[in-house]
Image (cartoon, rainbow, N blue to C red; front, side, top):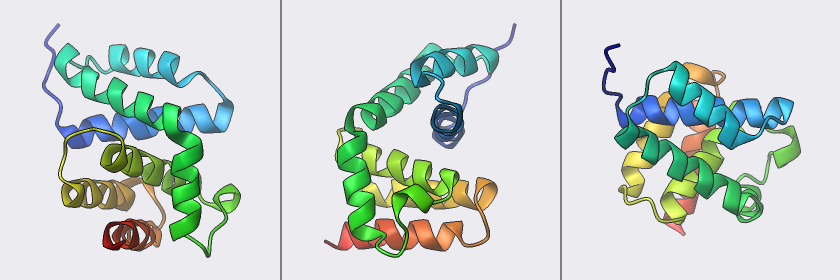
Length: 136
């Protein structure tokens, strides 16, 4: 079987899928990630980024959600669209908890992913929240 290389954006989309499934139906995120990585034939080197990102989100959800609530004051996290919430969690985990990627790149990536998977207002909302976080 030919295993094609995935971009970081594609890996982030996989992580979003995993976080949303885990959030919606309470499946274990690590089990979901293992299944999706296998189904999509993700290379071992690339899956390390996905596992690290999922782990960073899971280990830091309370702190991440506090950050989201601090910067998204108009939207209680319990009422936030699932895609927006998980894109924000993913971005904040990547920016705050040790994955070595420039913060501006992370913001641009999740805004682009929001254009694909979110609502019409998702990209602007996510950009605004993360922009405020970066400006602090």
